[in-house]
Image 1 (cartoon, helix red, strand yellow):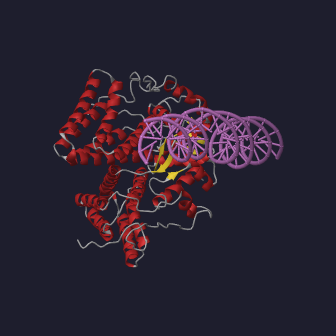
Image 2 (cartoon, helix red, strand yellow; image 1 turned 90 degrees about the vertical axis):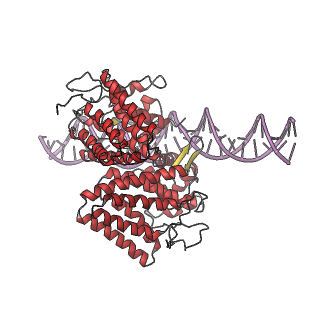
Image 3 (cartoon, chains in turn blue, green, cyan, orange; image 1 turned 135 degrees about the horizontal axis):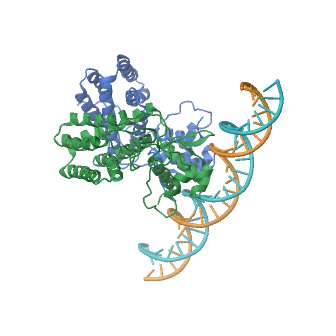
Length: 256
Length: 256
DNA sequence: AAACACAAGATTGGATATCAATCAATGGAA
DNA sequence: TTCCATTGATTGATATCCAATCTTGTGTTT
């Protein structure tokens, strides 16, 4: 359907948000061209797309690298995400019908079951997806695209960050936001959204690489070959305090 | 500094927001390559950038065209813009210092003088710029970039639209928003921002082309040759009820 | 040994030529 | 007139080549 450079950009994006390609990783044209078995030019076009999306940066005559956002930029991304979701919340509190609220509740319930059954990886994905579903209900595709881009960038940030925040509180936040909004209590809902994101950022310490640096060939291998790859989404953690490498977050229940 | 494809993308962007390249205009690779005296590949890269920015769309095996947003998409773009500016307003009402308010007031004053002295073209530019300055004060570059992209797309929309709204009311709106925000009256300020954009959209009738379709060669000619072109920003109107072709808007004082 | 300078190698940015696939348009046949 | 096929033009992509620039490694100088 779409061009090959778009397809390759999609794969690279996927590899980045799966933390297989970590910030700072060199994306050499020749190497990628060999990996995907296309010409350098197609690769270059893909890299341009990634750059426009904020996931890579091209330095003239030096090549492309997975973006390594500064702490400042990280904060700005989260601020922007908060702003967007608050705005969507304001719209939904007016306009959303019963079916919409039901969909949100159902999503939270699914995540809750995933947590209960110990499927941390699924719970993690669902937790991310909640924000996407939330924005989708605004029925504004432009807003959806902006939001999706911001989410991708926050996901990239987690490669740079030790995220030891309370994961289950976040799930509760989702449920509480729904409750507040449906009752028309917009202001506390917006404050909760802000706090929600702040609680994520608070745990952030931009220090070292959290995920191991793989060579592009290693990183991209699972996405190649058989058409649309099965579901190769392993995000091997580095020297974390373990947790089995289930997901991207540590699931520490804060006593607070 | 940056790549040639970026430079060409910038020129094309400029031509589009100057209404010299109108929606639907074919952007043939070979033709653009000749115009800019570069290879087709560089042109293709530029077109990819434009597409990622929402200003063009590439149809497989058919080529690139200046984007022709639907009415639905137009509304979504304005909704998104409203959402962003409301969010920024909420932030500024808390955080902005006296210098910031002064800068905003000064900007409005400059525009008022431009209107008073009959310099409609300048007034028009300043009117657009106000929104940009507003967002810049949030000191969030990510948000700035998102906003700038939305503004570009609204500017593109005006190529498709007969904009006969009251232009001076919009200026007053700017001043009033500043007043309300500085007094901490956030809610009315946000409602005014909403109304402000709605008053723009209300006058929109997506019908025919408002600006004449130039060939890419004609359209791009002013931007070429001498390094950074002087300031060739003529936006020749079509069969409008005249007004001298000063700017993109009709300056009708509504009796309302 | 440390610092500097320079040359070699590698990589990027870009040009050109070429080819297959697809779309558009023309023209002919029913 | 309508339908179909051939032709032409454009795009998507490749291979090859070249200049500019960056990196690296070596060698020299202090």
